[in-house]
Image: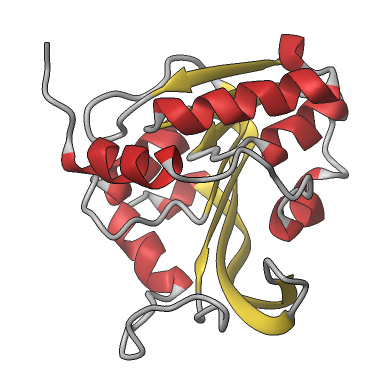
Amino acid sequence: MTAPSESETFWEDLYRDASPETSGRPSTVLVRYAEARTPSRALELGCGKGDDAVWLAGRGWTVTAVDVSATVLGFARANAERAGVADRVTFARHDLSQSFPQGEFDMVYAMFLESPVEFGRENALRQAASALVPGGLLLIATHGSALPWRSGNPDHVFSTADEVLAGMALDMSGWTTVHVGPLTRQATGPEGQTAEVIDNLIVLERR
């Protein structure tokens, strides 16, 4: 039996002590770019407690949602069952440094697929791009500023969208750029506090 990776160990330890409750709200960025698209096949990398997958499934999408933590996938399955969409979402455990889900998709999205431990994100995002059919949408959001209610390194430098895209090393002749750059939004904290934050977005459509 293969020993757990550093990434799996970190996220299992984190979610083992977490509440299974969710906000029930999909990501603002996902809603912005997905709500007008025709429901089809979607792949989510790093699904967490499943709110984005549940929202898409409720709109008619068939979703494959993956995460490295078996514990959080249990939370996500229960979330989908409560919402009555469990038949439209396949949850699967993948350590993206070691495996990637099979199939072709009309949308692949990764909302804040970031980690304090290395897991080969650039390679995973390249594989995500390869999994899209022509006309499919690649949607990646990363943090561009700190959430004020979370502790962290005050000297942390956030990668720009251009830097993340460069690291993916895509042949851009095969892509139409919808948006690459920052987007400002209002975020709500765990105690109802609000703040303006920056997301760095990569939104591409495969030709």
